[in-house]
Image (cartoon, rainbow, N blue to C red):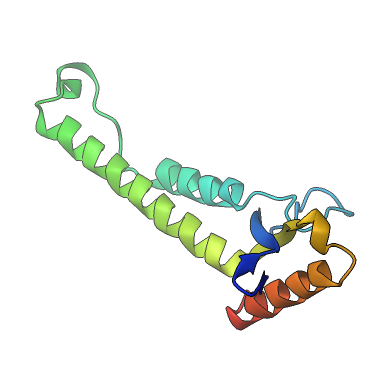
Length: 130
C-alpha cells in the first residue's frame, strides 16, 4: 500500500502445495495427500508388466552393449513419462494458498491500511485465477 509514494505496508500470498487429499484417512484435509504415490505405483506396475524392459544380465549388462543401452533408454523414457504424469496431476489437483504475512508501519496502524492490503491481495489473487 502506498500513500504519497511512501511505503506504509505490504503483504503476500504464498503457495502451500497441491490440494490433494490423503485417501487413507477419512478426515484428511486438502493438502494432506501426495499424488506422486499414485503416479509411482502406475509407473511401477507398467515396469513390472513390460517384458521388453528386462534388465540385461552377465556380459550383456556392460554399458557399451546394445542390451544395456536399450534398458537405459527404456528407464529414461519411464522417468520422462513419470515427470509428465506428475505435472499433469499437479495441474489437475489445484493449489492451496495462504495469506502469509501482512505488515503496516507502526505510525500508520489503526487506519485500516492492513485491511485494505488484504482486500487488494485477495482481489489480485482472484484476478489471476487462483
